[in-house]
Structures are given as structure tokens and as C-alpha cells.
Length: 89
Length: 89
Length: 89
Length: 89
Image (cartoon, rainbow over all chains, first blue to last red; front, side, top):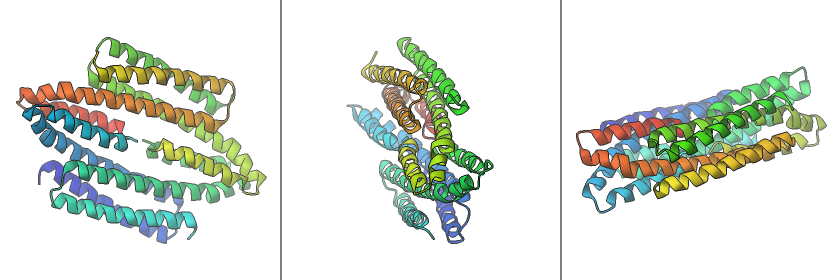
């Protein structure tokens, strides 16, 4: 597994642990805004993990497609755009 | 636990399960864009959970603070704004 | 016009001026990433303007609805949630 | 000017017109949630314009850098990532 994917994995494992923590906060009837702040923090981890996956994708699959020519790179970019449309919303 | 919090809990448990699934996808060296699409989906669940928490907060803590008067409601709104600043980014 | 709305107006006027600037950058065939960075900056201004409007709404319309009772406050909160659903995406 | 940039230009001109409309709504003291909904709509236009710029960048500058080799493509991808970090927040 390459560095970007390892980084994404670490971020996702941290996010998972924090979701467990938020579930405990809900069970302990903790203050809403503390819970909300934690959820926003987990979203930040997911965003970073996604960027690591996107960067790795562009430096491997998209790169190879551009080098292969015949519009293959543009097709891969189109695919990335579809994900970014959902990601940036 | 009220309905909004139960809804948030269900969403967070689903999100946790999906993060587990993404970790498996990484271990199975699955295609980058499939992984990225899943991460975006989990972010959507977290966003919904956060909205459930915010709605419940506004209908309880913020409401009571407004009814108590003396600027207490405005202070609670200020607090919500700080979370929304991070949430919307 | 209250302070929050004045703040929103200032932010929106700045955003408008920056959109003009981005259009000029496009006409001058400027570098893509410089244009993209400017668009992200304008989005930030819009987000701040929206928060100012939301804050003012919660401290006026939502507050008065809570004080009027009979579930009117909850109805206003429901409305805010619908906007936040789109805003946070 | 290529198609993506023309599309970005059209979106930005529409966004500028809508910001003018929002400024009028503020002067006419229109309802907060109507104003907020309009601001969210303009943000959507900016997001689309930004995606058009990013797509064009990847299919030109990033592509050429990959074809030039020597890590130039990876440097361009790094640059895109910095913008995406701000864009997705």
C-alpha cells in the first residue's frame, strides 16, 4: 500500500475511534454543541482522507491514462469531477 | 433520549459501519474513486447527524435561553454560529 | 437595517467586486489555479454573509416565534434546518 | 478561450447578477430565509465554475506536466490539492 493510502487509512481509523466517542457522548447525554463540534472534527478527518485518496489517484491512475493517450486521461478526469461535485457540496 | 438524538445515533452507527467498510476496501486495494465515493457518503451521514443535533439544540437549549431572557438566547445563538462556521466550511 | 444585515451587505458587495475581478482574470487568460483560489475566496465571503443573515434571523424571527409559543418557534427552526441542509453541502 | 473557461465565465456572470439581486433583497428588507436561500444558490454557481476551471486545468496544465515527466505532473497535482483543501471546506 502506498503512502497516500496508508495516510488515508490512519485518518479513517482515527475518525472511527472518534465516532465511537461521539456515540458515548450521546449515551452520556452530553451538551449538544460539544457533540456537534466533535462531528465537525470527524468530517475534517474524512475530508483529509479523501484528499489523500484523490492525490494518489491523480498521481497513478490519471497519470497512466494521460500517458496512454487517446483521451483516456480526460475520461479519468471526468470521473474525478463527478466525485468532486459531491465532495465539495 | 429524544427523537433527534436517537436519529443522530442511528446515523452515526451507520457511518461507523461504513468507515469499517472503507477500511476493508483499502486493505483489498479497491479502486480509488469507489473509495472516495464511499468517504463522501459517510460525510453526508455525519452532516445529517449534525443537523439533527443542531435542530434538537435549537428547540431545547436555545429556546429555553430565549424564554429566560436577559440576552441568554443571543449567547446560545452566538455559540451555534461558531459551530456553523466550522460546519459549513 | 440592523448590524448583521449591514455586515452581510458589505460582504456581498466585496464578493461582487471579486467576481468582477475573476471575470477579468478569465479574459486575461490567467493561470487556472489563481482563478480557482479566487473563486474559493468569494465562496468564503458568501458563507460569512449567510452566517450573518442566519444569526440575525435566529435573534429576531426565531426568538419572537419561541416567545409567541404554540410551536411557532419549532416551525421556524425547521425552516432554518432546510436552509442549513443546502448550506452545509 | 476553451469551452470549460467559457462555461465558468457564464456561471460567474450569472452569479454576479444574483448577488445584485440579493443586495436588492437586503435593501427591500426581504425575509431572511429567502435571502439565505439565494446566497446558497450563488455558492452553488461558484462551485460549478470552480469545477469547470479545475477540469480544464487537469486536462491541460496537469496533462502536459505528466507528459513532460520528471515529477512535473506530481508538482501540479500537489498544487491542485492545496486548492481542493480550501474548496472542500
